[in-house]
Structures are given as C-alpha cells and as structure tokens.
Image 1 (cartoon, rainbow, N blue to C red):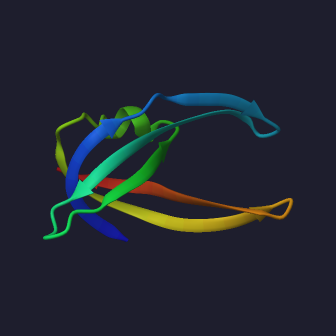
Image 2 (tube, rainbow, N blue to C red; image 1 turned 120 degrees about the vertical axis):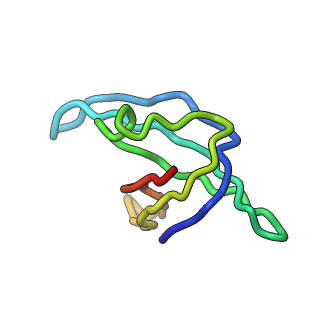
Length: 86
C-alpha cells in the first residue's frame, strides 16, 4: 500500500528483547492530503528508523504492508513501512 501525506506526530521509540534478540520500532502518524484527510498510524522497525530519518512536518509517500494476526484470542493489526519517498 502507498499513501502520501504529512507527518503530524513522531512517537517515542520502543525497544525490547525477545527469543530472537533485541528489537526496536518507532511509530508515526501521517495525515493524508485528501479532500477528507485521514490519519494513518504506521511503524518502522530496526535499522530503517535511522535510514528513513522521518521528521514531524515532512511530506512523504510511505509504502507499507498492513497485516493482522491473532494471539490468545485477541486480534492485533500493524502497518509496517518498507519504503519512504521524499
């Protein structure tokens, strides 16, 4: 999926440890440039946080995969960015 818009919030970076090692992610809120703007929450994982270097106020095109998964009877969703175009 590809969406264009302006970054209106850069949330705090999260990190932790799992059975697979250390992980890091950061979430961002993008507001679309449509007639009726929508706000989209997406996340960037690992080294791409530094590579993308997303700043509040930037206008970007973000390519991401959206996915849902179930764990112990609860459903969770994510929008994981894999490309950012300025």
